[in-house]
Image (cartoon, rainbow, N blue to C red):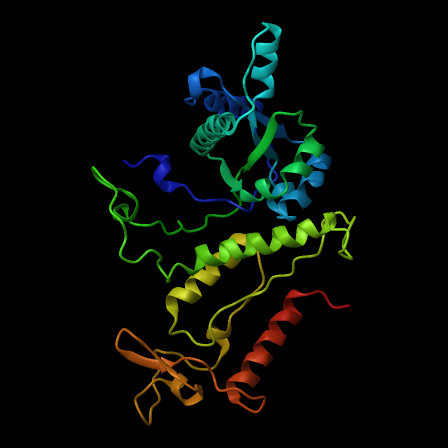
Length: 328
């Protein structure tokens, strides 16, 4: 029987049910049992359950709903502050003025975080790592009053799941495991991995918008969360690009972003060829073609306001936005 590790999925929707004190404590104790560098345990876990404090942290995580929705937020920190104080009390020099200490502390902290998450999932809790932490570490440090030598690395939200998403794709074993010696790749990047590429773009865009609050030249200087990051995801205009469309849907579900489904509303499908020609309907509306598994499809739609696809896509987009955005 496969362990809980093989069933892991990131949870982004949580029930308001509080985590029992004994369950949370056991998860935290499991974190403490992780391997550490020389048993120095160069990390700290800041547990935030207070709703008001979680609301303060939310902008640091680009206002992702799970920060305020999950009953528990754990900020995982590299921490040489505690060990340095211990050394100073014994008239010893901690020698933490180099990059090696940060690597050691980061390793300790992330190993502890993973132990925490595995134990939490064994108790039926859902978890999600927040990569936003490293983008706003300074603000998080101020809110949590972290002293010098304590640096936020990642954040884990914990709670009882209110969703059951599908398992996300992973690279095959052969792509990441090298036996005896490293074997280089003939094709460095899998171009079909749209979700990973766009995931990075979303994080980068949100972090740059957030950073404008500290830019004196920006009109958003001094605001609480910088420039509002408005992101809308769209599928391709027809359903032949199955890999891309599936990746975009997973990404929209993961981030809770609006999704415009052109492929499902365009008016035709790859499964129903043109009855007159037997070829794909998309070819009638495209200025060039793309061959997928030996079948020719329309690639880029014909341009111009009078073209059917342009008009249809505009109507689909407008209709979706009316349903998603509140009327003013």
